[in-house]
Length: 588
Image (cartoon, rainbow, N blue to C red; front, top):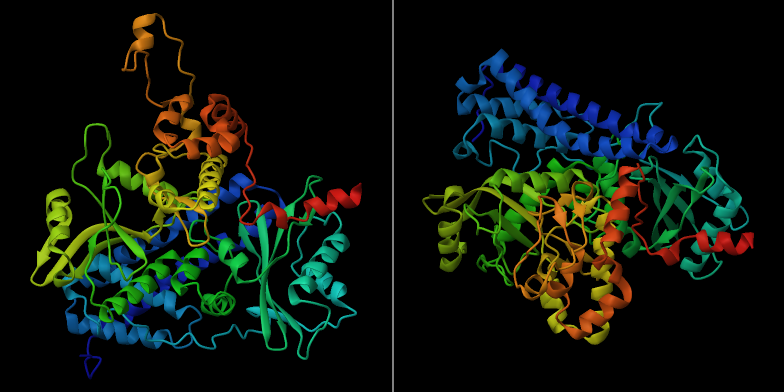
């Protein structure tokens, strides 16, 4: 229950100091995001990658700063629960006209979680549910940009309107041939709309900030044609001449879902009102959970908060039990799931077999590397949680026994609650080894080609997956192959790719053991085949499309290009959608 009177004179100061901590965080977050425009214009790809990684660390730093300030100035460790509830009431009042209230509520939760034991957390104390609505929030300052701009072209001035839309973003480099690119955009748009008829209230709505990621800037919006709304995204790149080009016109929800995939790095977007941006995006991608959209915008802490709310709601409306996840058990992670919930829960084991020379800290470091790195659509994003309380009666006894045996140090039973001190949660996918067993010949061919493409995309992003067995990859609902076992990943540039030396004598040739010296970081691609290609059908497809993955020269060549400063292009859309083929044809 909330107190009827605000009696603690310190409560308002604590609430105000906490909100000041959040405001500092979001100001720095926005500055880093806004600076992406200049990095893109200057082609500073390494700077863009570094900024994306560093921005992820901002939140925890600001939370720690806020905790230190509250302890130093207000001695908050001595506050009663009644006083903390008064702090929350004051905090809600301060959020009345705030433009990021949902993020500020999550910040409140993060700070208090650092200060208090989990047993104090009750629904009337932290923000389990939002207290401040994000409906209709808009930046109404005269000089501020709206969340999106709306344009009302006619059939006759479509190209002119698209030109104006692009010019309004005021990108400094000139376009190689904007009229040519706009012509491609218009033709693709009319084809998508099914003809040339523009209905009443035809309009093009465009989000006011470009979405920056890696070497691209994405213009995102929707076309309203009568009662039909069509999402679109236009990727803008630096062309071969150094000037800008619109690389493709992507229309429809499926294309946007690939761009905003949970297996890709977070965008850098300058947003005054993130909830309005998410609302706009959700209108274009209604199948996309809100927490994944916040994650895609780099607001992953609030994404975690939303995910947990959805998870609690699912528990209330379901009755099935958590179980050991189907498939081959991992040597490092214990994986369990809830059949009715499309995610898996991964807990680091307390001990590992001898062939796994690693530690809990090293494994956590690998997952952090993935979080901060460009995932190029091939590594699933993970949500990391501490001290998660589950209802014990929802666990199968076999799963509890496995947790007690392998993860005892992370397990705590508190009455009817089972607490796991640290775990990762990620999207559930069909393990590739299981998919291949049940697939048609056409599906097998597609999956094997995708598997090789996934490895090559990881290579382009300077990632060596380490353990490349089929069971460590999954198949998404879009048919993409994604890697999800991170305990052995390394930077490609930290590996030494070698050929297997020729045997010195007949004993070497007949030996079943490795008879040559292997140093730390050595990788022998020629040895991948026996582990991966036992199935003749799989081997035939693999060798037809990806035989180069068994050649050390492929790996070493990519390593040398990366060390020389080259940043590969990895596109979140099919090559056939690119305008480059049309440009070549037009030039010819």
